[in-house]
Length: 282
Image 1 (cartoon, rainbow, N blue to C red):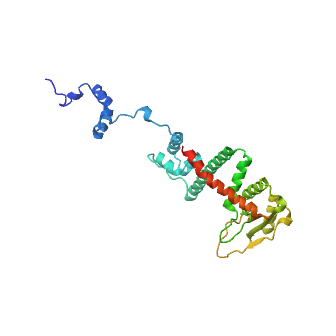
Image 2 (tube, rainbow, N blue to C red):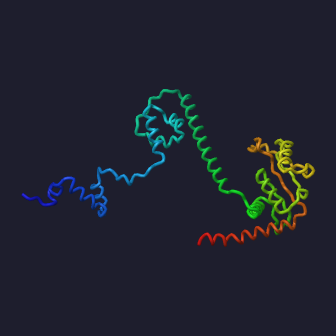
Image 3 (tube, rainbow, N blue to C red):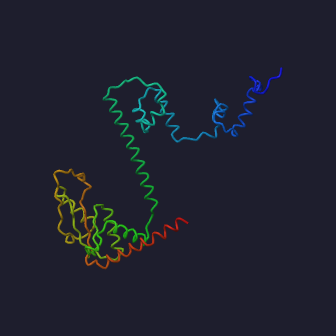
């Protein structure tokens, strides 16, 4: 007796051969339910499996978990986050508690310290790589950097208060070095510079004064009287470590003409920026 194709199992009388032929046509099936039934139990093709950089860590974490290690111990061993470890091993049996809360806390602390160390190493690696991307600067590049730096941190003239004076204030030693190098590039002589320190009265004032004299290489006579900032007892100062040296103000004597040129240079940079941006869009 002949069976119709859709009757009973007659449609699949050749077993996997018919199924294979149907699977070959799966891409032409637009009904998701039918497609899911056709592919049920079938492993995904190898080409669909993407390599994961953390596969080795995952395998090692599972191995350590099966050895009875806790999340904290695995974190110390591998340096990865506990959230990742939890995802990787949550289907495995939990190890029996063998340590006191104090011991577990100490292990967790070591794991967190290890994580912070790895983060700091990665952070420094990114910074070092970025620094190498800069390379040596031409005089024109130094000039443009100096103009932008001054317009960000220097004093500026206002329509309601004419202050055409070149005064640069900053607490960052590297910013001060860069500004001084820029002034020398412009031909400003060292004897035309005056310095003044602004610092909290509770800080090491004499030590800060020596620090800035050594950094600038200026004569002590070029330093004006230090301005002390009174401390508000209701606030807590955070800049109390050894790296705090106050803010240094650098003044250029008789600098009205230089200030006008700086403002003009900045206007030139702003005016040129849209042209550069448009070129980058084409």
